[in-house]
Amino acid sequence: MKRLLLLGLLLTACHSPPELDDMGTLPPWQMTDQTGQTIGSASLRGKPWVANFLFTSCATSCPPLARATAHLQELVRAWQPATGAPLARIVSISVDPETDTPARLTEWGKAYQNDPPLWALATGPYEAMETLVVGGFMQPIIRKDRAFGQPAPQKPTPLDTAHSLRFVLVDGRGHLRGLFDKDDASLAKLNDALRFLAEGGK
Image (cartoon, rainbow, N blue to C red; front, side, top):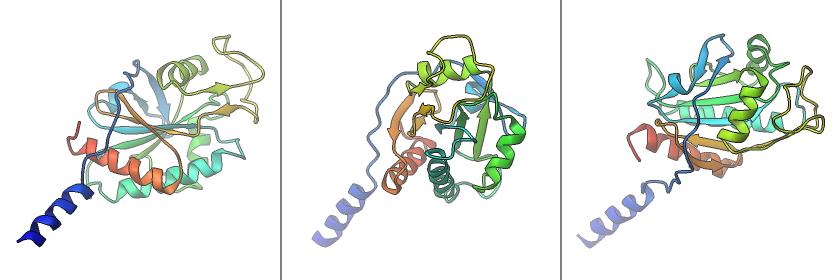
């Protein structure tokens, strides 16, 4: 009997809910995904999702981030229903909308086995993107050719642009719930947190 009780306690500990912060609410936003469909706070509301930030011409930090996102996609896919809409989503937001059209995002995504219903690649007007990333997600975008809030550039993002490499967890109410790195251990924790929220956790 004692052994059964101990086993029960251990199983409970292994499946304890993740500790998630509430770091505020995202402002309303709207962009276009790689399929040409509208994506934003309205279409994502009601289900948890994960955001990160990259651009297709980045050849240094973005490919490892994209591979990590593809790995997260597989972790999340494992607990999705066989049919119907996914219970959670991943959204990669381009910080180079001058270059990253939906068609370009579609081609880029093929190298990472991008699955549009589960993993969206989003692009939109530069000012709106910058305001969302910096002011909403509170993640940096640093360009040497301009300061935050200046008129939108009419040229591609410089390759030396610095941007966040973290994943941001958002719940179904649009609240920011956590920041996660791209290593395997962090992605496993992110997947657990995403599933916890998708299954009704708070």
